[in-house]
Length: 131
Image (cartoon, rainbow, N blue to C red; front, side):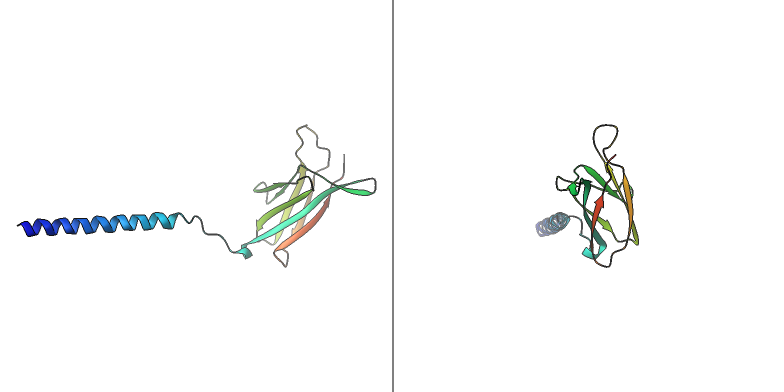
């Protein structure tokens, strides 16, 4: 009788140990996060937004650059540069508009359509006209 209870305890202990080890392995596997996509799945659209003052090109800050509707958005910095990573498609439509706090932007909004590039990166020079 005593041997039977000791055997039952060992079986329960081994079962609980196995469950605990499996749980720990599952938690550590979940800590790795979402798998990253292949680099070929995205295309980088970079560029510079500027305006012409007299005969010089001046970079424009705080221009909202959006692609594929409102899903992918970036804002130009002090150097007028932007960078957006978009999924591979045949065509991309980009919108450029000012985000000044006043009701009327200093620049006319602009949009452009680009075709799928041969390489994984596109560089655009966008000139905005002042109002």
